[in-house]
Image 1 (cartoon, rainbow, N blue to C red):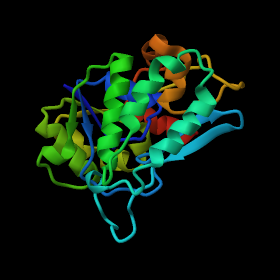
Image 2: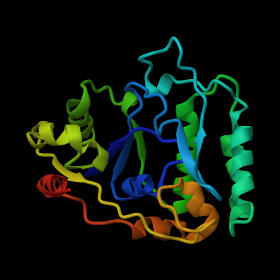
Image 3: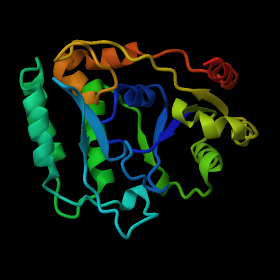
Image 4: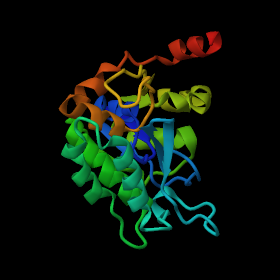
Amino acid sequence: MRIAIAQSTYLPWLGYFDLIDQVDAFVILDHVQFEKQSWQQRNRIKTPAGLQWLTVPVIFRGRFGQSIREVEIRDCQFWRKHLRSIEVNYHRARFFDDYFQALTERLTCDEHGHLLDLNIRLIEWFMGILEIRTPLFFSSRLNVLGKRTELLANICSSLGATTYVSPIGSAAYLLPEIDLLELRSIEVQFHNYQHPEYRQMFPPFRSHACILDLIFNEGSRSGALVRQGRGTPFLPQELELALESA
């Protein structure tokens, strides 16, 4: 039983979906503290000037410490500006017309809408396009406690995981505390992803744009291209050596 755990992301990048695709269960970490100006609320599209941020405005003032699932969208009309930016920069992309209307329907938000609901609505839509069928779980519904690695270990145990595939960005705190997982006979691996190149507007190619950039340019080939970047996961000792030599 392989699982991965990560926070929800607005219009995620390719590697996010590759991580979901290679596990048996993907847990959305939604009951931890929200981080302002993180990937949870923003991502990038490709423009003639390079990568451009799209940020979802959220209510933050007076709500320090709120969990991800509690975050409300501040301006329920923000999506109009995002759609306009997307249309201006992608209307000539080969598969723009195939997906733009469906994107419009999922990006539209009601007053007092929640960021988590928006992100999950989009993530599930993208998973359908990429033909990813991994079930999603929410940490807030698993009745688990703990912080950092202890929380991850408790989530893994609650789902009967034998292997935890971690985003590589978590290595800084996970490696020193890895025994919390290993003592429960949970093997730890780290996601290894090499960003593939694909047909893209406005050369030269720029990696790490959001998933929309791939889908508008490559259409039904997008799932195969996402998987093209997958490498053999790093074992902890392999990653430690790689980080030491970097």
